[in-house]
Amino acid sequence: MIDPMVSLALAVYSNKGAYALLLGSGISRASDIPTGWEVVLDLIRKLAELEGEDCKPEPADWFRAKHREEPDYSKRLNEIAKTSTERQQLLRGYFEPSQEERGQGIKLPSAAHKAIARLVASGYLRVIITTNFDRLMEKAFEEVGVTPTVISTTDQLGGALPLAHSGATVIKLHGDYLDTRIKNTELELGAYDTKLDRILDRIFDEYGLIVSGWSGDWDVALRTAIERCPSRRFTTFWTTISPLSEKGQRLAEHRQAVVLQTSDANYLFENLREKVQALADMDAPHPLSAKMAAAIVKRYVVDPSARIRLRDLVHEETEQLFAEISAPPFGSQTQLDQPEEFRKRVERYEAHCEKLLSICVTGCYWGNEDTTKLWVAALQRIANPTGKDGSGRLRGLYRYPALLLLYGAGLSAVAAGNFETMAAVLTKPQVRSDQNGNVPICSEIYPSAVMEKQVAKMLPGMSSRPTPTNEHLFSKLREPLREYLPDDEDYQDSFDRFEYLLGLVHADLNQQQWSNGWRGPIGCFAWRGTRHFQGGKTSQTIGGEIETAGESWPPLKAGLFGGSLEQARTAKRKFDAFLSTGTHF
Image (cartoon, rainbow, N blue to C red; front, top):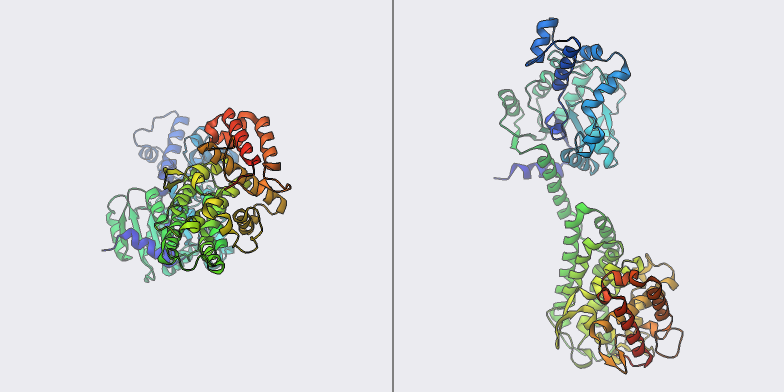
């Protein structure tokens, strides 16, 4: 048997906009909003106090005995507060939070109100019927940018648009708390105005119904409206926290309703929203392009509630790329020494990486410390495929996808000034090394380790370039980074900065002596504007930043160089000494 909650979610998702909500006082109970009758009883207590009498323990019985009439909301309110302003101030205390209550989360939209508002904002629900006087539903709509049509008096029914054309509509059957005409007594709840009956007949005939927080016991006119509807185009779902009363059970049987027992309204509507969203996610088209993937990441990365969907997207694309680069075609050695076959292999890698590259570039630019672990996990997975491609000069080619992603992620983080993310992508992913076990990715994956210089010269236009792999990456990453670095000079500066920092961090982590220096990967920065390999402008710029910022230098604060300013200075001095030799690998 299908779980009724699943049936409800499928019904709402499959029949978008075809279900109406009927909400009773239980929906606002979690927000400590009193019912209309509770307000009347409190007004009687205030009246008794004014008259110098004790109305306990049964205020309503005391009132009937003394005044020989039924308690009436409007009359009692007028007796206690004589002017419209006084009445509004008195009522606000029941329905609007004080500063202290706001701090405690009291009399504010509950999780149920917010979940309903999100379902309405997504178009799954449009019509809400409520017996409540409060404005919690309207406030929840404000938070998601929805402006509903609110009908709280019969006067407003005359000028209202048909439901099919009015978007989100809230029908407050018993009025609004700031209008003294609200319905509250048994007599008032016994019959509705003809106009209100007419719109209820249409809703109960044309829409499915989800009932929550309403018992069916006291609202005679509403119960009658449901009973007189002969048709059931869609299912009625009646949710309750306890068994239905006799009247409620008869009404549920009349509507052939599916009765769902639930703990509370918050759980019900949050669960419903999550299930509907899950169905939408499953039916959503796969992100077929890099641009679509980037657009999805932009939405997810700034929305804490979408962290699971973001994780699933990154994981799915990572696993797809991992499977593709581990497949047999990438394990063969067919004629890779021939320039054309080599170039095709690189192009195939790049084509397969396109979506995950776009995801990493976007995520590392807009993300934060909470999302950094996603890019670290993706890099580590792609840097350790199951098969090793190539031998001799081509032995590192199987790591070209990881190199491409590392450069894209790191360069994007540098462009955003997000050095915590840059430090993480350079050092946190662990890569298998034949000699040293698992090592940080920047110690094992860098341009000359993936493609020897003479191999990289087979790439298009790179036959005479001093750092062919780096320059190919510089060209290949231009478009993915254009949105964040539109100016070509800024792009070049950021690229050189990232490559210099990559070399500097590598040198610090490995501290391999070479001609009195610590060797690290050479980048385009080493030859721009000079005929000799050296740090050049980039080295000077970074050196100036270190001396100016001191211990506040962002890469240092991000945890690189062990957080030691002196270690950063030593690493730079040693790395620059290596660069000055002109020896590179």
